[in-house]
Image (tube, rainbow, N blue to C red):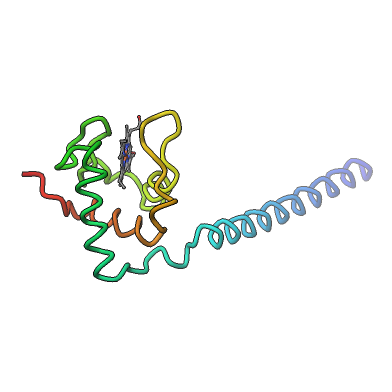
Length: 131
Ligand code: HEC
């Protein structure tokens, strides 16, 4: 039945175009998100003075809620074994924007992506000793 096949061909074509459009949309969205979130400096390092400041902030400020050894307090524990299942991106985003409806504040006014990326590295390394 030629009519039916015709319809199917057209549907197929529409599907393909739709797929291409969705792919294009995904690529563009990823690029925009990457650029606007400062993806390029995700792995840049703060200078040594800033690193010292951030290490101290992690201990004093983050530690005031998450425990001085980051084993938990008002905030959840942040030991390496606890956060190992979370990606850098998720942790960075959580720290920058905070967790609305909980005491976890947003740090983006005070810390740059670069800073937070460094803090996540410290957390992963267990830089604050647990004993
Ligand atoms: C005023 C208290 C407070 C301070 C200060 C604070 N946090 Fe939190 N944070 C919390 C609480 C409470 C939670 C858990 C929120 C919830 O119920 O999900 C949390 C959650 C988190 C999480 C998510 C943990 C997970 O298991 O996914 C991360 C990461 C985190 N904090 C990092 C930090 C870092 C890094 C700092 C310092 C720059 C910091 N926090 C400072 C209270 C705080």
